[in-house]
Image (cartoon, rainbow, N blue to C red):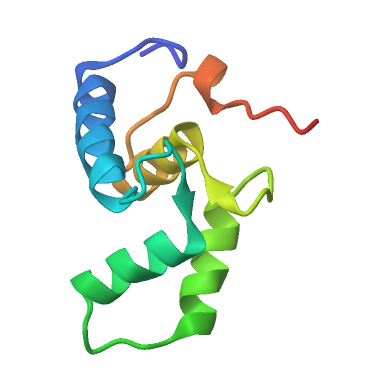
Length: 96
């Protein structure tokens, strides 16, 4: 299969990520802050309280290191976690 081809698995992943991203982005500003990310992790794992681990994961996903997760950064992390190939054109993140 060609690397840049958009698969049905990728389309499903975009839909699932969009739903999850909207759920985590409680402020509604189309980006996920560390506080929103931590609140979501805490909600999903109430027994786990490791701020450093959450911060490390957030920084790993935050490719441009601006302190927020935009949708493409979030989508990239979801695709990577779930083994869904992401088209190259969407997998490039400009560092300005």
